[in-house]
Figure 1 (tube, rainbow, N blue to C red):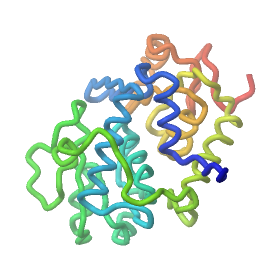
Figure 2 (figure 1 turned 135 degrees about the horizontal axis):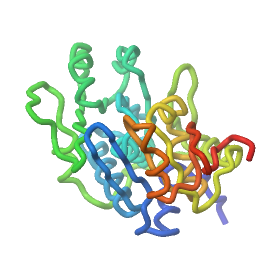
Figure 3 (figure 1 turned 90 degrees about the vertical axis):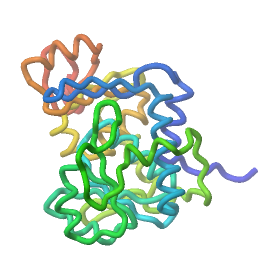
Length: 267
């Protein structure tokens, strides 16, 4: 009997579907726009499959490809990350001051606000995301970037990679280091244990803490533990405790709220 391949990030989403496909997996708040978006494992998997199909069919993304991301912490960013990893490709995340490094990526997905600076780099393949609460396209944009929201709609809800995904292939390039697809899952599982994440946890994390921690911490570690997420963008501190109570939050990451367990801190 051949040995079982190590799990990849896509396998973490598959496991979430098997646990409870209908339960909330990511709940996203934006306190500026007033947005609240809730995705079950099924809904997230649908977005992931469409994203992976778009990347594979329109940009030939697969093993050996590098996809640049200039995106904030967001539910759509979660779908894009998992979509890239489903293709067996590497994610290259950058801060705004490092935009020029994205010239080496095969395709770049960026927040609409980042597009003007990226367009000056002459990138061959550029997709813009409006990050609209309902997944709608960019309003009033006339530049060369293709509109992610409009492009992704026409792609299938089920994804099958054209080439086998190699767990040993590079999955994340960040700073001067890199992690393979399998190492991403290993790091997420180890981090979940170190933080004290357990199955059934509902974790509240704000954008600043998630940005500083990176996608292994804010996305993959909760998935590896069997937890769900409440992501807060531009969070108003005065309302976080009430929100945590409403969302039945059991733990926080990078935040201290009275009466709620802070991950990584002694009880």
